[in-house]
Length: 416
Image (tube, rainbow, N blue to C red; front, side, top):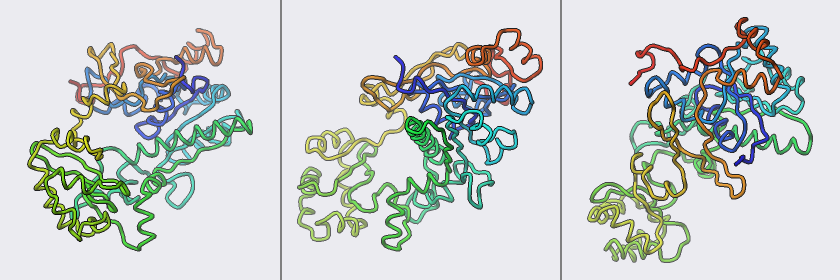
């Protein structure tokens, strides 16, 4: 069934993670996403491990369902071809250093002149304006500059990078939101516009509570481990066989009292030091050892059953293997197996979390080889015949897939 974005076509020049993650979100929702890759190797993520029989699982996971056309944008013929394609699409996406596309003669002003309805999304480390606009940036750079790493980790410990590429992923999500917003506005105005997404801006945006607390109190937020800065208990606790997470909510009557009774510490209910969430947070250093001692007496599964029975928000602290085995994850169809002909076995990828009742999205197929749909796109969008496409291939302006994937040596691919 077509997704909600089935009428949206995208030329996607993005590479590695932030941009491809954004276009993956849109592809899962039905958009036709055509990666514009440099011949012969394409997106550098194709060489990123882990590899299965020469195929990058990393590239596989965020480029599934897309198409690929290989164009040499440094050649005059390649640039003219790209400009021709731009007239037929809704969106162009790129995540180069600002000015790169202008240097190719393919910047926003040039492309919008060809297609006034075009949405042009540019994702970069620091955005298109400001003193740092030309500086290179990767995920950890914007996490560091944005303050995220300063509040991640244990109290008194060194800064810690979160276990996912939050700088890239946040920028990818905001890029997708920006594109959808511009497409919606185009329905009123009939005009396209540029979407300018800065990875650093996105880190500031997702820090919401920490930034508001700083300006409200003047206190610089510090790392708290798994604790919440304003609510207690609201963190991970050790159990007899692992860890679990608990989150007592604000304003829910009797939750603290029920919790104390269930863990066998009723005397804490009337302890003046712990009467409110604010007092429990203030005195957490006294309270935490008591709760640790009580919770370590039973297993995670036993505690989850007990707390579920009284409606207390809780859950196991899973590793990745345990998380993907959760019945709730399986029931929501959040994992999809795709069989790649060269891998020889299925590879499981996350599905879209956007659940729509009438026009559902979902993973739409395998990732493409470099230039796999070159002929298909040129024929369907520009009406080119086989002879015309062959002349472009002979001139080096475009390349078609070999059907064999990347032919890099095993030591480069880390093949297994």
